[in-house]
Amino acid sequence: MTSKTFTRDELATAFEKFEATVDRAAQTRDWNPWVEQYSPDVTYVEHAAGTMHGRDEVRAWIWKTMETFPGSYMTSFPSLWSVIDESTGRIICELDNPMRDPGDGTIISATNISILTYAGDGQWCRQEDVYNPLRFVSAARKWCRKAEQLGTLPDVAAAWLRQFGDRN
Image 1 (tube, one colour):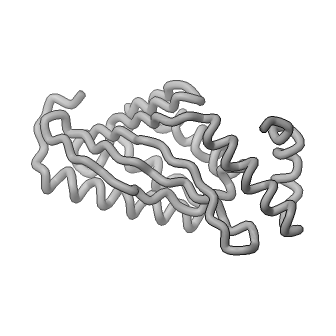
Image 2: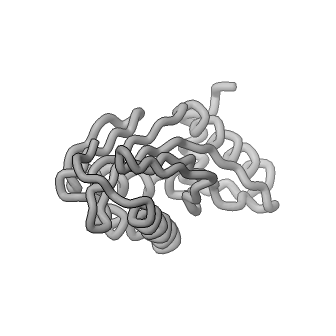
C-alpha cells in the first residue's frame, strides 16, 4: 500500500499509459519498456510463478514467459474493465490474454485480475496477478487442438501439446 494519495485523474492517466505500454510491448515483443514502468523496487506477485522483487527479476520472468509458448502466441492484453481505488492508489482490472488466430478467425483466450499499486511519477510499485492457471493451460490446449485440426500447429506448440495435452 502506498502512503501518498493520488488524484483520480493522475491514476487514470497512469493507467492509460500502462495500457498503451503493455499494448506496444505485445505488438513489438520488446518487454523492456513494460518493465521500466515499474519502480526499481517493484514487488510483482504472480501466483503461478511466485513473488518477484525488483525490475531485474520481473524482466527475467516476463521475457521468458512471453517469448515461450503459449505466452509467445498471446497477441495483446487489453483490460476488459477497471476500477480506480483512490484511497489505496490502486487500479484493479481484468486483463484478457487472447492468442493469435489459429487460422480460421477463432479467438481463444483466458483472463486474469491484476491489482496495480501506483508509486507516482508514472511508475507502479506493485502488481499482483490473480487467476486460475488451469484456465490458461486449458486455453492453450484448445488453441493447439484447433491449430492441429486446421493444419497450422507450429512445432513449438506441438511440443508443448505433447507435454501438456493429454489431460481433458
